Length: 117
Length: 240
Image (cartoon, rainbow over all chains, first blue to last red; front, side):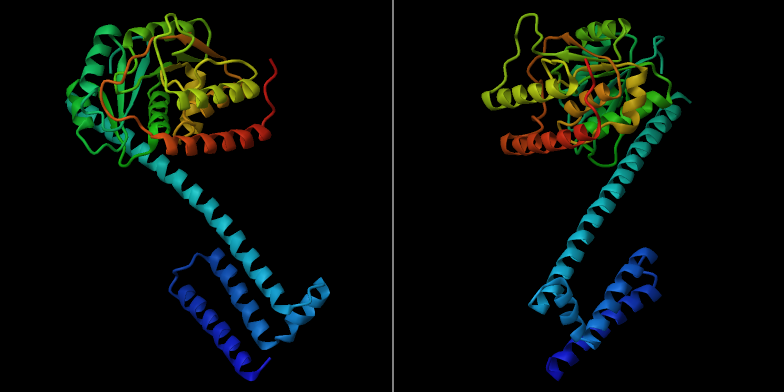
């Protein structure tokens, strides 16, 4: 790895960690997501600091071209994350629906009661 | 809220301002003494005002939830207010209120859920297009395989529900289009409820626009079949 690439990777990793840390301090992230993103940022930082690590892992997995491992991991991570978000979204939608139904029924009863008086 | 037999008619209505007054009027004439709840499913027109003017109770949803969501709202209301029986009726005039007595009679005979079928017909009056007819046939076969019995009209929206069905559907009623009829039928069967079919005559819709066109219909059928397949694999099919 050339020193330019090393520098670039380090800058990217450190920037990511900083962005995550800032969101955390401003409480824009729920704790469970913060842990997730922090571990990802740390992983990036570690790889940026020790690029040989990737080659070592690839060798163990029987992958000859190092970057493939990185892509594989990154894509799996993103896909799993998308699935998780779909689940979360479904849950939120269901809750919104229930709230909408309850609002409608409360309003119906209120209308009915005010009619009678 | 009058009515002594604790039966409520649930009418999901989405932009039915034009057809609704006539439906409610006919309902009051043909099936007097029933409480009526119109669920305005986020209409842009004056559906709520029209229903209220005709003397119905109205639950006005803040945004569109689809027929299934509107119905679940109705079941929730029926449960909270202690109704024993609920009748689902379309707001577009497709269903003849004078048929309600037949549905209720089947409930009294012991069924938990009664479907008004267009095809178990006395005089075969209802005709559907070829594509839609084919899709309906396919659904009938799938439902037959999963429910262990044959239903002539799986997608009918003219139905009656007993107390057990009301309780079940107030929490688990499927919300999406088409699921509200077919999936609900399967859910009831899986839950061990007895589902009966009663022949009813249906008419052309009096107003409003049909809820869906061909391509979207195809998508909804695909989605429905997928969902049915996966939920069926989770629950053992009921023995006959």
